[in-house]
Length: 358
Image (cartoon, rainbow, N blue to C red; front, side, top):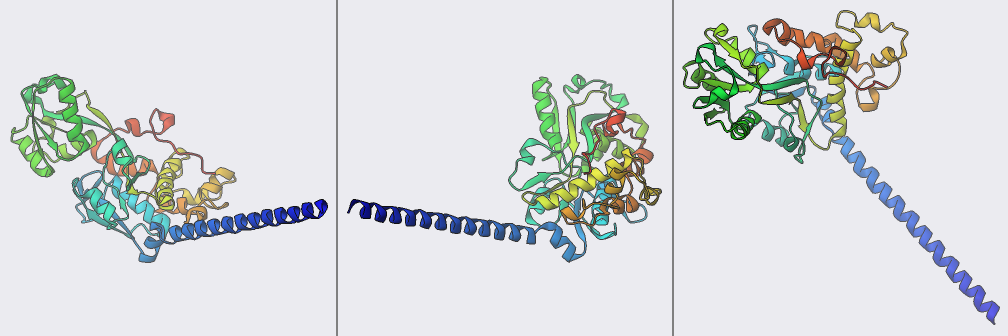
């Protein structure tokens, strides 16, 4: 009797264990299936897919800032921010013209991006912790490293930041420039008046009329806007700066594929400069026997297809838009004699470098 009961217990126990294993396996398959379905759903609704189906990229830009994004004398958009958008279009479509630009002011830029009306914000925007940790925003690598400076008329006798005491300073509202200025004046215990508006033309008009004795913003902006003042040589940028301003493209959070595309297109231009690959010699470099270069240009390997692009995406970018040096010189170096500084390659003392393409 004892042996019979023992056998029955063993059979029941064995059956229970089998049922639990089967249940666990079924649940695991169900979880994997749900996860897989979710991942497929995410992949099926990526920005890259929508852009490909639409046939062009929609890029939010400033539209009124020479050197970064503006309409030139020929009626075409130009600038370093514009060229990044064209580089992305080239990577996707092998055609840099397949991009539409939308001018956005500082106040509306993030709301328009979050609404989905644009695919990418490439608008001289400073990367900050609070912006980057916004649940809906994601910053890609900086396209330009800047600093916040002060522009003054030489006749004002303002030669250092402490001389701003008792003066009025123009600054664009709802920007990091405004916040930085307030913080600096408070910390330095400098009593100065602030005139803020989102209309940059009004800011510079007030400055030229001496309603503001100084105007602050990104140094690159001050240099480019100075060129259109009545007497540019009368105005100087103080040697002291208020803050560092890394300017980076912004896109919606939680789309890792699209983030990768924008990020690696940026890196492709930087890497191309380091290897001296230009729009003029890219086809020559395709014949290189170096594995790293062949992989970079898509002659071999699957670096492009792994993120939804063609393997020669970097070749497309360089062919149509150029490497980072070409983009910089075309938009900032030659027109404004703006030195590379922090925007030089790492090997030249700058901050620009790309992770390995492998």
